[in-house]
Amino acid sequence: MPRAPKLPKVDTEERFMARVAWAYYVEGLTQEAVADKLGTTRLRVNKLLSEARRSGLVRITFNTAFAACAELEQALCDRYGLGQAYVAPAPSDPKDVQMIVGAALGHVLSEVLADPAVKLFGMSWGNTLNLATRFVAALERPDLEVISVMGGLTRGSDLNSFEITTRLADLLGAQHSYFTAPLYAGSAASRDTIMQLDVFREVLEKLRAVDALAMAAGDLSRRSLLMRDALPSDITMEELLEMGGVGDVLGTVIDAQGRPLAHPINERVIGIGLPDLARIPNVILAAGATYKVPVIRALLRLGLVKTLVTDETTARALLDGAA
Image 1 (spheres, rainbow, N blue to C red):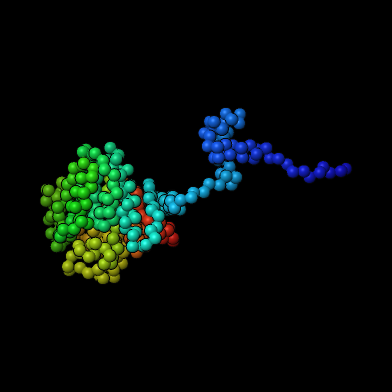
Image 2: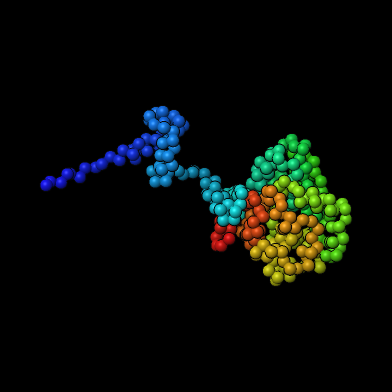
């Protein structure tokens, strides 16, 4: 019995899928318009478009420097349980990382602070946060209060919490208040005395009640503002490194697992601590540069950060290896 000749077969379903994809992606029709044009339902169009992407019939590419960043953002959210990640493209000159991350933070803050549900906003200090104020969109938020969440430096600086808080509040037409205390007390005993004063108790309760908070992270090197200008004279950076410290957040020095270092410096911090961050709905961490990867990773491991703002190179390093 003769066999039927092997003729090419037309896959009518794939052909129809191709027509749907062409009308949607090339002609720019809506799903409803595609359905009307091809005499089918919108539900079938939706299913065929999904199948076209899944099967590889349609491949979407992005001709933009932000494409890789979008992929990294999702990977960071998945790895560290973040609500949002904002990854800025890597600058051509690594020295510009802080500027890039500061600009990215400015855009994030513009969105966060435009939300009328945010009534009390906490601001840390540091160069990244200082730079961010240059990129925050001006708003009229007289109902908003910006409060500094850290004790300040003892000498004037554009990077001090007082100056940054004032500058941000002025941009927003908002109220502002300060945490008028040094970052570290002279001893654990004097710290306890200060924290028990009525005026400080009230401020600390206010800090713990912020709707969102922006903070930076510092490494243990001379690049860090805290190490340069705020470390108590009776403590050395070397001893913190020897004990396993990788950096600080809000003045608390932590190890690679995110645990506060068992060192007297952490008993002298005047302000809120890591447990307080767990109560804040949106803790925003802005930090970049590969030398900060250990301290950023340590903080992310704690699960306290809701929004991460960083650069592309740092993001890749954070994803390299175990979380």
